[in-house]
Image (cartoon, rainbow, N blue to C red; front, top):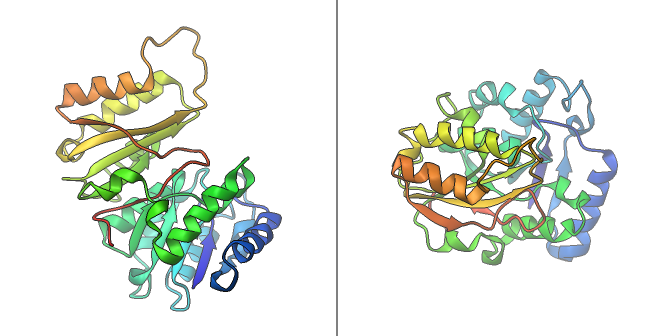
Length: 276
């Protein structure tokens, strides 16, 4: 298996790429995939891993490459929304056969790919997770799924839900009403977040649950909400109470917790029906 790594948002260090390749070899031995990291991942243009043109070209090049089986987003950050529409319009038949894996800012591309039924799309760990304490488990989980579709890598609820999708809350809010918004009707929608004030999460959930598309989901599950900053006054409700509040107002079923988040325990959520 050959896995192409691109960075639609922010850059990674060359040392991470070398560590990733060595980790894959040590973890999977003769079954280890060949990991091909695009040089664009190391570029720097202000906030981004290269300017918009460089990031766009790298994604399209690897997505259209018939020798690659999967595209793995190197990390999140910000930037995918600046290239997503243009990228989707340039993909060929080889792109439609690939697996795409990432989360956070990468959810913008995952959404557009899923909308246009391009490849197999999943929310799950990325190479940058190798830099977190205990991140080896997350990266190994991702590789096991990419190589073997290992069921133990997948969020447990996915095994029982007919159709699923997963997003960072702020990312989903940002794509609603845009050409990247996929049809979520009948899906179990899993949401997670990191580093946001509770009042901003509340505001985002107002927007998300006001969407007719989201109101057509089977229900919402809440993943982990981590590193919440302290506001100048207590918000008065925790993240689960916030989600319950907006689900109730919108008539959306709240289905409990999901095992996803910006952490090393993040499990994989394939979009759509689970392919066994």
